[in-house]
Image 1 (cartoon, rainbow, N blue to C red):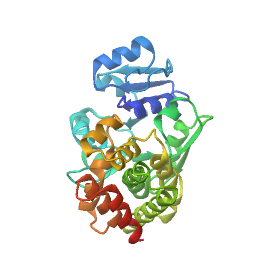
Image 2 (cartoon, one colour):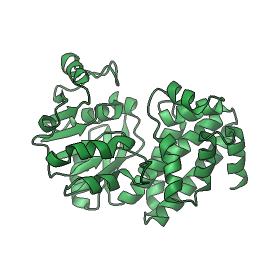
Image 3 (cartoon, rainbow, N blue to C red):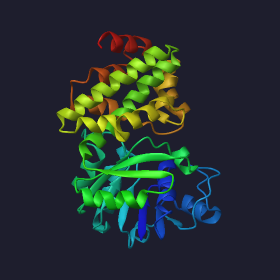
Image 4 (tube, rainbow, N blue to C red):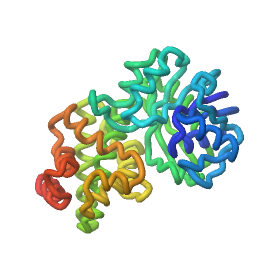
Length: 319
């Protein structure tokens, strides 16, 4: 079996490593040929996962057609805000195989989730989403973790989940794609808020309260969109929420901490060292559904209208 992973950032590279346990070969598409050449020469992705050796079954390249040729399914590890443009470039030669989206968030221009974008742009038989408490650095180091693969066709989701499963990485098939999309996007916003609590030194009680309020609003939005409540109590919901909101490995958490310490948003993002999807997702969620007071308070901080301490006070008083 050959599997293609499109996107060689930290998460895409870690996922390629997971898939290499069962697949005969894994193609890893790199945006820059220089990165692909470095991966081929050293057997590691020093730009995004330094010091982590990659399986010899992983073949890095920058030519899309070569990477996806013969793939049983394709994994999208492209940042959410770049997803539509990338897919539009590839649409004419995209193979008619299942697609697994890893990007979590909401498109700023349309308010759409990743799987919605994929369905609009590509003509493929199945669109799935993978999500859970999966911090890339831990996965790459072989630490134990679990995730869910969501697809409307349970049999296909089970086949894909089996391809991802290793002795330490356990993938479970579910059918609630909407719930997994909502949870994956919303948890980034909650991670910003929890990080603000930590950065401002507001304590464990406030952190737990903000985490709980975020989970509650996440589930309420999901239910309005037709998701199952149980999804938000599982790996893609509470599991991913806790991991992303409390770990220093999470860029969204790091941005929140920097904001809580008083840094302006551009400096906070720079210090976090990479894309924090929650920054774009928060206002996009509000445009999709205005009845999100938790998200509204986070957006107020991002836009400089209130301080993190004021936002947390408003969140707790509204609970």
